[in-house]
Length: 306
Image (cartoon, rainbow, N blue to C red; front, side, top):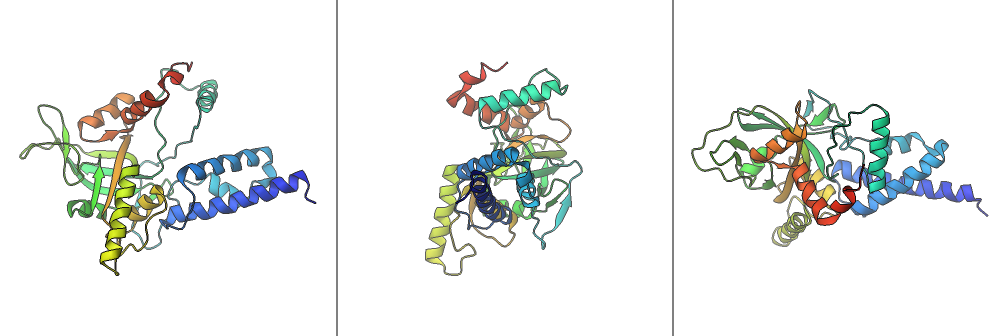
């Protein structure tokens, strides 16, 4: 008969193995994972709770999983890009209580108390978009935080109509009625002949799929499989973050895909005001989009925060 601890240890190792396999599928862009985003997050939360209760269960495998930076497993054959400024990961908060605890913890540590920026934690692929003189020239994944994968080839796929990325302008132009992005990414509405803003800099954010985009992309894959036995993508994706990881990082994939880019901010300018300015350049800024979700769901609860 198992003791209470033995039961906990068995459950812990079972959760760890399941999450490790799912995490590997996500990092490599595979489609084998049977866990939805919500299921993964709930199981990971439970694993961490047990790990904090019994620290001696925190093996190297556990630490690698829990402290992994998005996209850490770099494809060996891909070109790499070293980030000038490290791309850090965000911690998750699943309740108002966790947000309150974060505010208290950081305030006690001496954090400035002139306001907080609350953003949605998106399950996709964090990317860096570099512009020169108003034109998108480089795209890279976050990778391990210091080195990411070069996915600049996606720019040509956007131009060719293979990728449709809402919120990621190929070109940034200025208009009297406000700036707008142009290009096959499907953002903005600048007219022909408009002048480029000359923006040079790096914008970071999350590349992900909405439910509608996920269903649309899978429908295209299914249709291609029926029409062409030699399709480059032979099976539909089980969840949206696997789809984004697989499609965005594979230069060989010719799957027509629909995605969205939410900008977190410009490197070197991360104030709320600067993030809002990105909207004028044709981006979807994560603060405005998060605010919409809060207004629709639980804005009243946030009014109660200290």
